[in-house]
Image 1 (cartoon, rainbow, N blue to C red):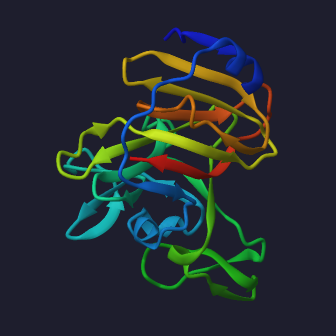
Image 2 (tube, rainbow, N blue to C red):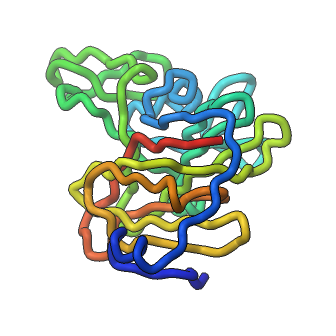
Length: 232
């Protein structure tokens, strides 16, 4: 995989590479990993932060198996055209990424007795109340420095990938992010290190097939991110 343009930081890349052409879009969605529908259909609502690749068994979310006709990890509706999917790349490296909780008071574990195990709650280990995991704000995170996450859009009708735009993304830190994207023409582009902050990418990440991110080389920890603004 050879990118058409390589740069050490966003400013250098902007100076060296031409902007992409925009495409028409009908919906703009901010993926903050706090969508109740999406979290409901992650296996066990990622109650211990593990967002596992998920399928359906008798109408219930279960870990994905080869017998499942369709699987997803985090899948959020975006307008009438489709779903925004966030998953590890390639699927099967760890079979999960992490959906970390925003609320630092979630420090103990509680088991609600639903057969899916314990998850984070509030209180202490002798008196812990389970959080309502599908309604807790989150942020996405890799398993380690080199763990890639993929963002892509699935067509609502055909379930095939759609081209889309990303207007911006927030790198939470402390690790800077390495971000790759594939254009509709098949070419690959990347930034090797984007520091923790909100990045406006709208002039460049248009008409793309997918966006991939991990921690920058040498970060020593996984990437964390949210507020991915998708235009579909």
